[in-house]
Image (spheres, rainbow, N blue to C red):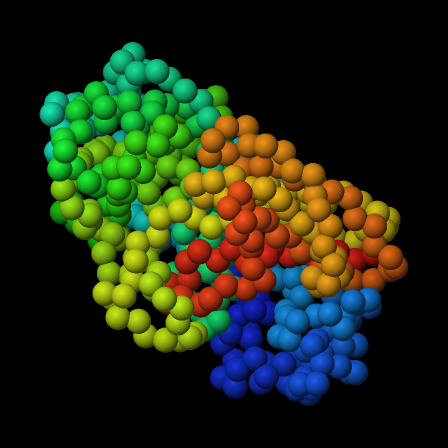
Length: 433
């Protein structure tokens, strides 16, 4: 599986031994003056214009330390419809933003997040799911049983990795360096998790679910699980959650968990166990693989970048934050026309998106986009607007979403040690000839 991995300019800034100022001096021959908001001046600004391919009309509005989106780089995974390979053991690949323009994410463009090795046997005819633990009636169900005994439903549901956006943290956070593409909204077919749990009979002392799959630990040891997470029973009973056996009208893609998986929209993708074989109910918070320590957890309070935080001060991530993505135009595109459509997707954890705003002058002014309602609970929302740029040059289009509770995407979020929950603005580069 061949791939190339260029070094992004953001890594150059992150890894420079003398910090961002040292990186800036190496790139542009001087350190930015502190008496202006932009981070380049005189020869530095000219050099930046050369690098992005045009003058920058709103350079005076550029926040200090801003790295133009046009300079972002990505590697290419051959034969995967444009996905970017981040790791091959386990295999993890994200989708460039412009390939997420469909309202329903195609199978070939849905991101891949693995914690171990896929199972060798994915035969849907012999697959079985066990429901046990603190239930009245333990169940063992085939996929045929699920189809016959429960109502089959189809919904568009967002799955997003909790670490989506990790690549933008400084200092860097360990883990897959997702940029924006660890998200997708396929159409999933299955049965409601709540219906199956009701059939098993939830006992009064059950407070948390525990999920298991048939993927293999990287060590190859059968007694070790690559991941086994869960959620509060109250969340498990949300009727948007599915035990899914179909994706986009056909079988689930093998790298997306065929033949059976959980889909838990609005919470980290790690709750949506792939290659699902067991759900058991517990009388305590689940303590399976990647449920303890700092996995899928953030500090309970803001911390300064680079701070060491005691493990006991971390809390489990639950609902994901409000977020938006620009899917057209593609970043780096050169436009002959100054007026063109900008569009994308927006989503907001357990709630909905109330508004999406766009800026092309580095946040000095904003314009409201047209926003569609979600196709169903748990789906992302389509937005679009037309921008009219005043003159030729280099521009950045920024998008920010606001959810139904008034929470708005920030320009930057507080740092956390594992690089989770980054919902800062998505921004793209556009050059007008």
